[in-house]
Length: 135
Ligand SMILES: [Zn+2]
Ligand SMILES: [Zn+2]
Ligand SMILES: [Zn+2]
Image (cartoon, rainbow, N blue to C red; front, side):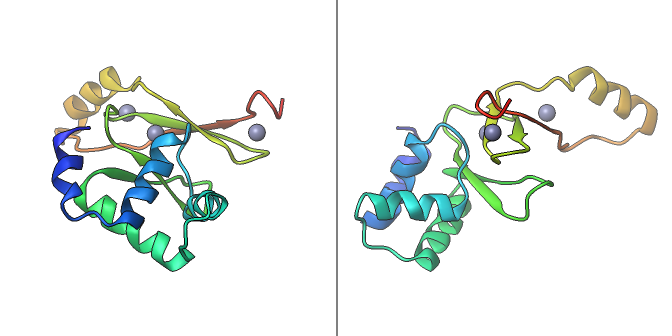
């Protein structure tokens, strides 16, 4: 457990901890609906609005990150711990999202800064395709 989570722990309700545990156990970024379904399955008494509110609060604290993939109309959330800047790939058939724990754009970023004289702050890049199950 890192310091951010420990600091957040003081303000952590049981619900918030349950939401966090769900994201921690997931192997890919989850939508609020998926978090809700998993908590309900574990018989945690919670409603979708509370799930959403907790996800927002945990994002504000900085413990989790919110992803908005452009091919989807909904946000996904994932744990921040142990993960720096990275990218994602999404399955076109089932919608599953996987982490690509790397960034191939360092050289390109340097070139863009040289050409535009901008200082690059951020970029977004995502792939889509077919996951092993959907091929
Ligand atoms: Zn798939
Ligand atoms: Zn990710
Ligand atoms: Zn990148």
